[in-house]
Length: 258
Image 1 (cartoon, rainbow, N blue to C red):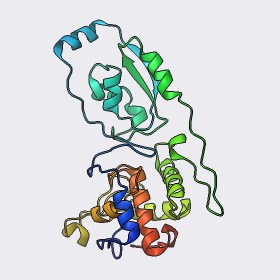
Image 2 (image 1 turned 90 degrees about the vertical axis):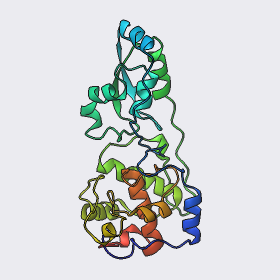
Image 3 (image 1 turned 30 degrees about the vertical axis):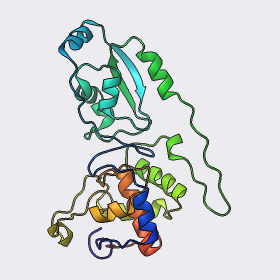
Image 4 (image 1 turned 135 degrees about the vertical axis):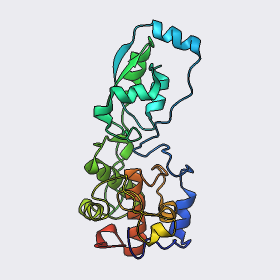
């Protein structure tokens, strides 16, 4: 969001206060639970040496695991006693995960090498849980599809569609074309994009992520159910559209620096 408008620290209007009160309470650059979520791959504490020896002595089994809401590589590795922890799990699945181990999304298929005898049962139970039915439309409001009941591709198309479902549930306007157009102008589709050269950067609040949101704007317009992380693609899109709706009526009305 280089330029005017969005870089002003937002006032405490009712919408802003409501959103700030409904936040997840996470810290910036961490990845808590997501309405259709991503999570941090922080390394868990090392297991005692005796447990490591026992685990190494057992044959490892390869299981197909489907990522679900709230997962992280660290959590999966700890649950299934993956030898080498989340780093080994990431190494085994880098082709599927991509270059950033933090960006795992519901529906992503992973190969997990475990020594736990009951792991197959746990995997089947967790990844085959029935999805909740989608919400019914109310009056003239567009139907809100529950993001937690769907899976999305781990790419720009999937991030936009996941955000649109969350926006529909929260009553935030915006279209696929409006979001895509602004993303391509602001970041060319790079969720790790950061502007280190403009006036906002000089003031210590560089614009970040797909829609180039500064930290104060992200904090004020963050939408509950998404990670409190401006680099998280879904959280960034949803917060930016929430801001654009408050200031311009919709992200669809934004055709330049905002």
